[in-house]
Length: 307
Image 1 (cartoon, rainbow, N blue to C red):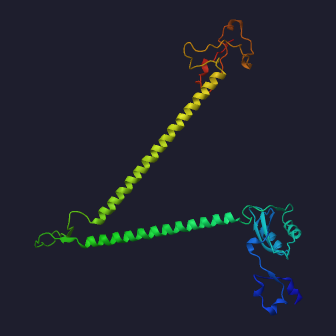
Image 2 (image 1 turned 90 degrees about the vertical axis):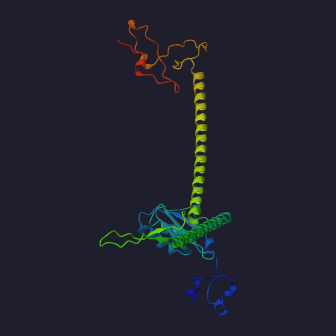
Image 3 (image 1 turned 90 degrees about the horizontal axis):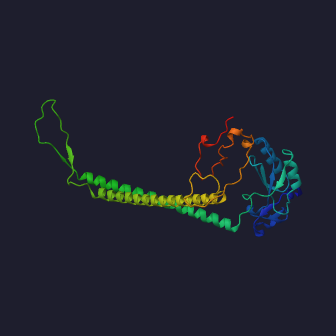
């Protein structure tokens, strides 16, 4: 009998245990499965066989309640038994290292951590919301079906009121034309159901058009606002650039009587290091490359020296 006592039997309450079994078994208090402690290992597994091997090896370790492996995430989650049966973590790691030498324990993912009261509350609310939406959709579908059935009945009733008109009786010649009876409605107008549907559709279309117009107007206003902001930004950039380098060549030109910038010393660039010939002393001075707000000049407007 003693060898069976090493396997505990978990029970919710002590009163559930019959008296004659109390002494013969190892009884322990049950713990909710959600509250059992979890351990996560990082184990690299190359194939499904590796994953299966890791899970099966760890499952045999003392104190293991459940094992779950996720090969693509290199993750093994071990759920341990309640306190009296402590998990042998060294043995778990030793067996995991049979597959991956660098296997190690890591912190639990957010997904594996026990849910807080707030999360549970949020999930319950979401589930409730989803259920309500489904019920609403179901109700709408039923109402639509009822409406369609009612319209169908009305249509059938309207057709029942149609009288048949026949052409005047003429003795038909052999092989002559045959005129089948032509249906003719009693009134000039279709039934009430037609007008009801027609007005409802008209109303829907008007509402749709109104909504589209509002959206279009909103969009246009947003675009105008954006364009205005972009223009202001561009203006500010231009002003900043002009203030930083006002002496530079400005293709847009300055208004008459504008600020005067004295000529700056001639800058030396690698392309100018070749000393020009005596005949070229009066070549036009170096032109600065245009600033972002200035127009791009064509390649021929740059000064060239010919030797």
